Length: 353
Image 1: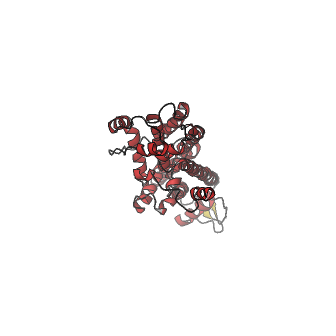
Image 2 (image 1 turned 180 degrees about the vertical axis):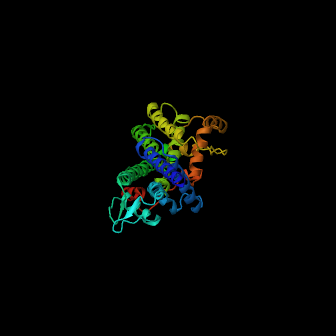
Image 3 (image 1 turned 90 degrees about the horizontal axis):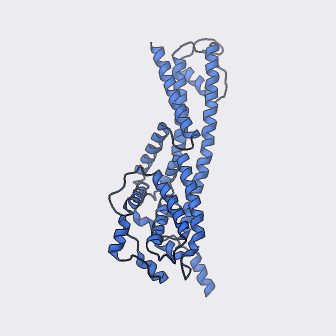
C-alpha cells in the first residue's frame, strides 16, 4: 500500500513539473501555476526587503533570482518525483559492485547523476524495467535542463530590449510636458511623427514578449530613464496632451497618435488584472507647455481639463497602480535626467559662445 502511494505521489510530482515546464517554455503566452507562484512570491519578497522603493538596488537582482528559482524548482520536482518511485521498491537500484539493494540516500544520489546524465555507474538499476525507467529519467533530465538554459537566453535578450525601449522614450523628454515641448519645431508638433511610428512597433513587440515571458514584468530597472513602467506612463500622458490639448492643425498625425495609444492600450489590457488605485493622478502642467512653445492650448480651464481626464480615470488609475506596484510614485514620471556634466546642453552652450 505504501509503495502504491509513493509511486502515485511521484507520478503526480513529475506530471505537475512537466505540465508547468511545457506551459512556461513552449506556449507563446502564459505560464504554469508553479512558475506563476514563484514569479509572484519571489518578487514580493524582494519588494518588501527593498522597502517598496523602486530605486533600491536590491530589485535589480529579482528577475534573475526568479529565473534560477524556477529552473531549480523544475529539477528538484523531477528529482523528488523519481526518487519516490524508485524508493517505493527497495531493490530498484543496486550497488554496482556488491549488487546489494541501496538505501534512500544512495537512490537520491543515483537519481541525481542520472538526471544530470553524468552516468557515474557506481549504482545500477536492478532489471529491465528499472533500466527503462532510468533511461526515461536521463531523457527527462537532458530535456529539462537543456531547455531551461535555452529559456534563459531570450528572457535576458528581451530584458535588454525592454531597457532599450524605456531609454528611447526617456530620450524624448524627462516628463510628459517635456516630451510635448521637445516635439515643437517652432511651428507645430509634427516632428513627433517618425518617433511615434517607431515606438508603436517597439511597444507591441515588448507586450508580446512579456506575454511569452511574464517574468519580464519583474526585470526591474532602478533608474527612471531605464524603467519601462515609468516611461510608459510618461508617454501615455504625453499622448493625452497631444490628443486633448494641442490644436488639431498643430498636433502630430492622427494615425501616429492612434498607433501609439493602441499599443499602450494593449499593454494595459495585459496588466488589467491589477486593482486600480482609488487615488486619481494629478493633472498635467499645461502652463509649462504654453510658456515654452507660445502655443495656445485647448481645454486649459481647470473644469474643462478635469472633465476630460475624468473619462480617462480608469486608464490613468491603472497606470498609477502599475507605478505603485513597481515601487514608484506619480511624481517620478517627472525627472531631471539631463542634468550632468556629460549632457549635450552645456556642450551646445560652449559652441554657441
